[in-house]
Amino acid sequence: MLARPDGSDVIPTQKLASEVLVLVEENTISVKEALRRYFEGKNVDYKIRGSVHAYVFEVLKRRNLIDFILERSLGFRNLSTIKPFIRNLLRIGVYEMHFKGVHPALATDSAVRIAKEISERSASFVNAILRNAEKVDVEGELRGIKRESRARYLALKYFHPEWYVGIAKRVVEDWKELLKANLRQATYIRANTLRRSPENVVRLLEKQDVHVEETPLPEVFKVISYEKPLAILEGYERDFVIQDLASCLVSYALNPQPDEIIADLASAPGSKTSHISAIMENKGRIIAVDNSAERVERMKARLKRLGVKNVEIHVSDGTKFNTKADKVLLDVPCSSTGSVRSYPSVKWRFDRKKFQSLLKLQQAFLRNSAEIGDEVVYSTCSITFEENEGNLLLTKEIFDVKELKLPLGIHGIKRYGKKSFRDYKKVVRLYPHIHDTAGFFISKLQVSG
Image (cartoon, rainbow, N blue to C red):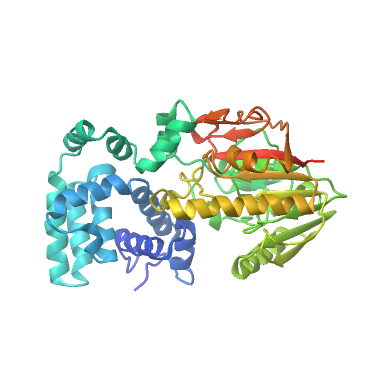
């Protein structure tokens, strides 16, 4: 039974959100991708979709404290032993009663009704756990933890894992503000100037009750308010795209010219590729590379909708791909520690071994890019030192860091532990709490010799 636009046979939002949360959890995908898969081919009203989206995001933002409350409510049972759907239904119930302001009895009743569809036993279990969760004195529990472990206290208080709090404290002085900013979302729209002028896009948006304000980039606007989800509006993914301001600055750092050959070595899903094409006015040549055939197919369809014509796409490994270009864009796969406000599930997936593998992959990208072009723009949506200044230190025999001037951003990290990065004033960092963008690192490199 599906939720219909006329309001009949409406499935509770909590049930839909629980199912989406299971998708996120079991498939290691983003909320955006999980929502796309879940609603694909289903006739669900946009208001219900929006409500499900909000529930999933808000639960994931606070998942560690929500799970802490549940653990206090479970007694001898371990949260990981509970079936995924019920586990996420419980998370939603705790979110409603402790963070959304829903009366505990109503939050519990909603969850119990949904659990009854599985079995009376499930309903009884959900009822018992949420009644216990209602009684948890969160502030009192946090005060107790503060006496035992300040690191754990800060992680729970600010809804981040301990490893992230540790990174934040090492990269910025006002780290608490960074953690708070990660809980707030900001949405930016980039006008696709291959099809419409920025002014015409603003008028198109205003006609659909979307209000925006200008940014330092003429084709990029910050969304202030909207009535309907941006993804269902006229012109979406044709006349405009949703793209963070920090991400758009990367293309400006590259400064592509209409007569140049540009290599984009990690190109999917194609946001920066299409932006570069727009700056080049569909002239010159962009060689776009990605190692996922599935992502490439989606990117091809996307670029076609956007009217991009100067791109040739290759399914290949960007660390080994062989070509020649005037400039190289290297927006590498990263830990996404700068994007947790848009991808909150990232916070709960960190793995030290995978992180070390990621650093090696990024260094391989850097080394190969030096074989392709003399000028390289290296960027990540990460706030870590290791993925950014640290990688440039490890490849300093290959590249000289060139001074980069952008209309937004601050300089990089000068010292990190025992490591020193002398070119810190030449690179650019952006942070959610300072610039209201994703956390980003952008650098401009010149191949030595």
